[in-house]
Amino acid sequence: MWIANPVSPLFQQLDKRKNELYHGGFEPIPDVCLFSEAVSADWRRRNYENNMAALLLAIEVKASERAGGRLRLGEITSDIFKLQAHRQEVQARNHDFIPVMMVIDTVPNLEERMTQESFAGSQSAAREAGVEFFYVSQDQDFCSMTNDHY
Image (cartoon, rainbow, N blue to C red; front, side):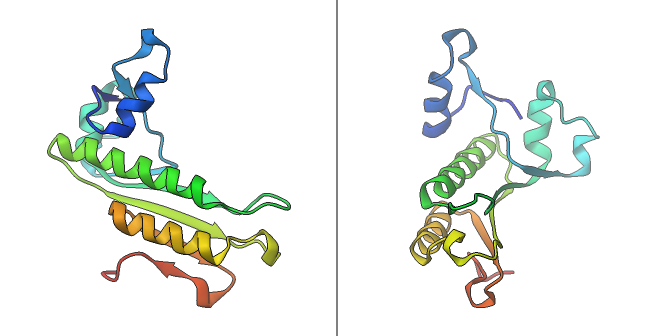
Protein backbone atom coordinates (compact mmCIF):
# COMPACT_ATOMS: atom_id res chain seq x y z
CA MET A 1 0.00 0.00 0.00
CA TRP A 2 1.88 3.01 -1.30
CA ILE A 3 1.54 6.23 0.71
CA ALA A 4 2.54 9.22 -1.37
CA ASN A 5 3.92 12.28 0.41
CA PRO A 6 3.74 10.91 3.97
CA VAL A 7 2.63 13.26 6.75
CA SER A 8 3.58 11.15 9.78
CA PRO A 9 7.05 11.84 11.20
CA LEU A 10 7.94 8.12 11.17
CA PHE A 11 7.07 7.56 7.51
CA GLN A 12 8.77 10.83 6.52
CA GLN A 13 11.91 9.60 8.28
CA LEU A 14 11.71 6.16 6.65
CA ASP A 15 11.16 7.77 3.24
CA LYS A 16 14.36 9.80 3.63
CA ARG A 17 16.38 6.64 4.32
CA LYS A 18 15.74 5.39 0.80
CA ASN A 19 17.80 6.23 -2.24
CA GLU A 20 17.06 9.82 -3.28
CA LEU A 21 15.56 8.62 -6.56
CA TYR A 22 12.80 6.85 -4.60
CA HIS A 23 11.82 9.63 -2.18
CA GLY A 24 8.23 10.87 -2.09
CA GLY A 25 6.40 8.02 -0.45
CA PHE A 26 6.52 5.03 1.81
CA GLU A 27 5.05 1.57 1.57
CA PRO A 28 4.09 -0.04 4.89
CA ILE A 29 3.59 -3.73 4.46
CA PRO A 30 1.38 -5.06 7.28
CA ASP A 31 1.30 -8.83 7.64
CA VAL A 32 -2.48 -8.96 7.20
CA CYS A 33 -4.91 -6.40 5.75
CA LEU A 34 -8.67 -6.64 5.57
CA PHE A 35 -10.49 -4.38 3.13
CA SER A 36 -14.12 -3.49 2.57
CA GLU A 37 -15.79 -4.52 -0.65
CA ALA A 38 -14.95 -1.05 -1.98
CA VAL A 39 -11.44 -2.30 -2.79
CA SER A 40 -13.10 -4.28 -5.61
CA ALA A 41 -10.40 -6.99 -5.47
CA ASP A 42 -7.83 -4.43 -6.66
CA TRP A 43 -5.24 -3.82 -3.96
CA ARG A 44 -2.40 -3.11 -6.35
CA ARG A 45 0.14 -0.47 -5.39
CA ARG A 46 -1.10 1.95 -8.04
CA ASN A 47 -4.60 1.82 -6.54
CA TYR A 48 -3.29 3.23 -3.26
CA GLU A 49 -5.91 5.94 -2.66
CA ASN A 50 -8.77 3.46 -2.92
CA ASN A 51 -6.83 0.96 -0.80
CA MET A 52 -6.48 3.46 2.02
CA ALA A 53 -10.18 4.29 1.85
CA ALA A 54 -11.18 0.60 1.85
CA LEU A 55 -8.77 -0.55 4.58
CA LEU A 56 -10.66 -1.88 7.60
CA LEU A 57 -7.97 -3.65 9.61
CA ALA A 58 -4.16 -3.89 9.46
CA ILE A 59 -2.41 -6.52 11.55
CA GLU A 60 1.26 -6.90 12.38
CA VAL A 61 2.12 -10.39 13.66
CA LYS A 62 5.11 -11.43 15.74
CA ALA A 63 5.55 -15.08 16.63
CA SER A 64 7.99 -16.74 19.01
CA GLU A 65 9.99 -18.92 16.67
CA ARG A 66 13.65 -18.43 17.53
CA ALA A 67 15.54 -21.25 19.20
CA GLY A 68 17.15 -19.80 22.30
CA GLY A 69 15.70 -16.33 21.72
CA ARG A 70 12.68 -14.30 22.79
CA LEU A 71 10.41 -11.72 21.28
CA ARG A 72 11.76 -8.41 22.51
CA LEU A 73 10.10 -5.14 23.40
CA GLY A 74 11.95 -3.13 20.72
CA GLU A 75 10.85 -5.25 17.77
CA ILE A 76 7.24 -5.25 18.93
CA THR A 77 7.10 -1.52 19.65
CA SER A 78 8.67 -0.87 16.24
CA ASP A 79 5.67 -2.56 14.61
CA ILE A 80 3.28 -0.74 16.95
CA PHE A 81 4.73 2.63 15.91
CA LYS A 82 4.54 1.62 12.25
CA LEU A 83 0.83 0.81 12.69
CA GLN A 84 0.30 4.12 14.49
CA ALA A 85 1.98 6.04 11.63
CA HIS A 86 0.00 4.08 9.04
CA ARG A 87 -3.21 5.07 10.80
CA GLN A 88 -2.10 8.73 10.92
CA GLU A 89 -1.58 8.61 7.16
CA VAL A 90 -5.01 7.14 6.51
CA GLN A 91 -6.71 9.56 8.92
CA ALA A 92 -4.95 12.49 7.22
CA ARG A 93 -6.83 11.39 4.09
CA ASN A 94 -10.17 11.34 5.95
CA HIS A 95 -10.41 7.57 6.40
CA ASP A 96 -9.70 5.21 9.29
CA PHE A 97 -8.99 1.57 10.11
CA ILE A 98 -8.24 -0.56 13.16
CA PRO A 99 -4.53 -1.20 13.74
CA VAL A 100 -3.70 -4.48 15.53
CA MET A 101 -0.47 -5.84 16.99
CA MET A 102 -0.77 -9.61 17.44
CA VAL A 103 1.86 -11.51 19.41
CA ILE A 104 1.80 -15.29 19.23
CA ASP A 105 4.10 -16.49 21.99
CA THR A 106 3.32 -20.19 22.15
CA VAL A 107 6.73 -21.84 22.29
CA PRO A 108 6.74 -24.59 24.92
CA ASN A 109 10.06 -23.51 26.42
CA LEU A 110 9.43 -20.76 29.01
CA GLU A 111 12.95 -19.37 28.50
CA GLU A 112 12.02 -18.54 24.89
CA ARG A 113 8.80 -16.65 25.70
CA MET A 114 8.51 -12.91 26.23
CA THR A 115 9.42 -11.62 29.63
CA GLN A 116 6.72 -10.07 31.79
CA GLU A 117 8.49 -6.72 31.38
CA SER A 118 8.45 -6.93 27.56
CA PHE A 119 4.81 -7.96 27.63
CA ALA A 120 3.84 -5.05 29.88
CA GLY A 121 5.91 -2.57 27.87
CA SER A 122 4.39 -3.77 24.58
CA GLN A 123 0.88 -3.58 25.98
CA SER A 124 1.51 -0.08 27.34
CA ALA A 125 3.04 1.14 24.05
CA ALA A 126 0.05 -0.20 22.12
CA ARG A 127 -2.41 1.48 24.47
CA GLU A 128 -0.60 4.83 24.18
CA ALA A 129 -0.42 4.52 20.37
CA GLY A 130 -4.10 3.60 19.98
CA VAL A 131 -3.21 0.17 18.60
CA GLU A 132 -5.10 -2.95 19.61
CA PHE A 133 -2.83 -5.52 21.27
CA PHE A 134 -3.56 -9.24 21.22
CA TYR A 135 -1.30 -11.70 22.99
CA VAL A 136 -1.67 -15.46 22.78
CA SER A 137 0.33 -17.79 25.00
CA GLN A 138 0.09 -21.28 26.43
CA ASP A 139 -0.14 -19.60 29.83
CA GLN A 140 -3.80 -18.60 30.00
CA ASP A 141 -3.14 -16.16 32.86
CA PHE A 142 -0.91 -14.15 30.54
CA CYS A 143 -3.31 -13.72 27.59
CA SER A 144 -4.51 -10.20 27.03
CA MET A 145 -6.02 -7.55 24.78
CA THR A 146 -5.31 -3.83 25.05
CA ASN A 147 -8.83 -2.44 25.14
CA ASP A 148 -11.86 -3.57 27.07
CA HIS A 149 -14.40 -2.96 24.29
CA TYR A 150 -14.13 -6.45 22.77
